[in-house]
Image (tube, rainbow, N blue to C red; front, side, top):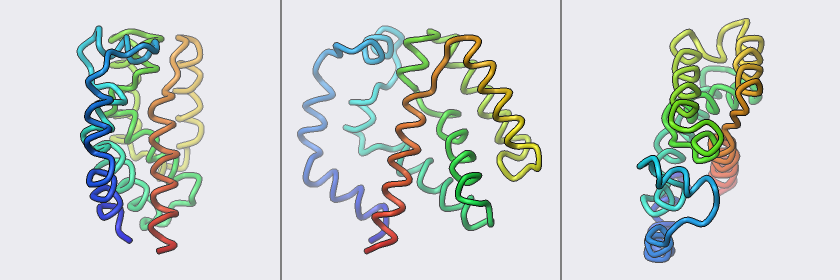
Length: 159
């Protein structure tokens, strides 16, 4: 099975329910923050068929593995690709719009500078993580999207 077939099945079988869920007012801190800031929250992302998952994360993971990155480095690269574009509700809740944009900028810079293919990628990623910790930023939505991409890749590889 191809990831897009999985996405199509998701939309076909659960699209209406996901859309209905996205119309409810958020009650969790991340959802409240994304709504307050005018960002796309997780339920909206789901209602749209998870575009960041299927259009960014899965392709980035596949590219990283195809380029010969180890699974660990391919996942690291994917995490930064997702952080660069996702309206991460956890980052928005913890750091406001400024914290979210800071994390997105750090992720874009990491990718533009060669990403996980650079020999010093782990040290660079660790420095970014240290900065996030100091600012109480946690890209939990990006991490969840990475986990989902790993799941999609595994499911599609076994079909």
